[in-house]
Image (cartoon, rainbow, N blue to C red; front, side, top):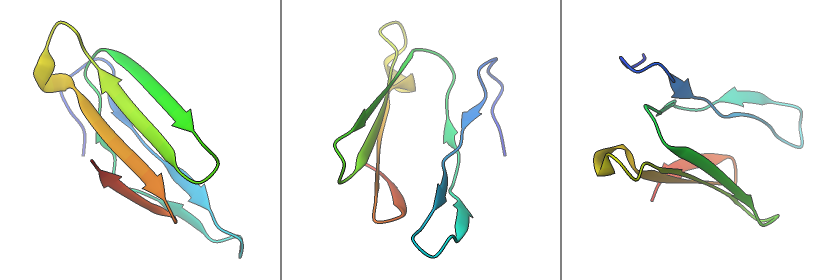
Length: 69
């Protein structure tokens, strides 16, 4: 899977307490700023494009699950 943008997709790879490695669904990233906030309990990933609002997105990674919020 991919997109037609120069930036490509962002992928999350995680490892749990049992050393199980997992790849999660890719997040399409075309342009804008990627902002990652880690509060210790969860990781929030935001994509902000001030020029093209449809490129904005927000994801949450918590308990080894990636979800769009």
